[in-house]
Length: 480
Image (tube, rainbow, N blue to C red; front, side, top):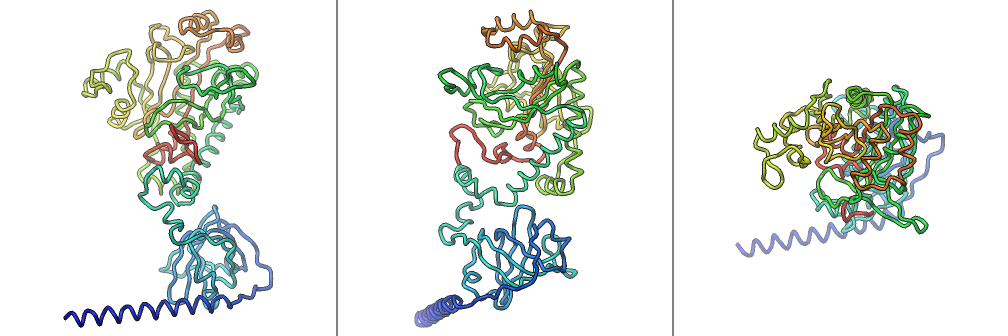
């Protein structure tokens, strides 16, 4: 028995050596194979335009997204950012050194004719490029440095963050970023339909909006300055000249928070509206959110990606649920949802993220949580006429992610605002330009800030907002 086993092992070793020798010989011979570039006019196209150029001589360039060899054929799924295309190499095209050593993520150029696939076969856009000639433009490494080893599925999140520049080449990450682009187009189109003007406020400031503990400080020519927490104050100054305005800017919060919905730098979509009531502000938010989603769903490419990433997504129905802050406190206690310290909630609590999310997920509908106590909200928020201890403020909560929008009516009376500075211990002098908005023709007005990454995490069902940012910045992460 042992002799038979030994003989079998010897035969297997001999076969492996013979195969290795054959492979080496084939590789050596492949170096002499030269492909003759075809003459004629091969139109250069982007993959997305392939359907319009079937049965025509074309050339495409891109990255090898998938690769397999089969019976003298090499199948390549090519990616160029606009889409994916199956390409087939056969005959002499498969015998070159580059063909035998081709790796994932190598860049190639392929000449050929795009042919519709017969019934029963499938490929992206239901066609494939039958190659006449090709070349490798830049070969990616194999072995230990191969792409799939660098960004292996299930790798530690910190490793994937280090290699984010490679992760975004994947189908999921790139799909998220493409939907993000469609969402930004839709937001702008929705604002345009409302005749709301886009402005670009500064990111380097010397005043605070959300509290000093989250400010990123830096030296500005010998003066103390900060990265902006919000563009709100600047947007308010635009109302008398431009009417309703919005901006899409990066905001910065120095919160040492490791939750799945916090970033140190995030894309902040903010707007300020003049001559509105609190209820009109809420109705505007409903229109912005639902109108933007309707536009994304009407975009065939974007809606297909959204359904691919989140098949169960349901377009929210209007009106959103209105829930008073005091009713939320009552609901949390009735449903035995405790504070982070394990206690019952009381009026005055700043409801913690975990409790808020449990409530939102349980109710499973969009919620406008309104009228927060003045002590837990910013100094500029308008007090409720019926009870000055509460503010005309709103957080828009969505199942799965929690708060995506925070907004309020703003104090419009100069004397009231000056008292608010004093109460908060804020020096009013640096805010003279903000206070002037109440001095030179004031009006009832309100506004809000929407976190784009949180909005995307909601509609795409992503576990963390970090997946919705090109290069996320959070505590201890400022690379690559």
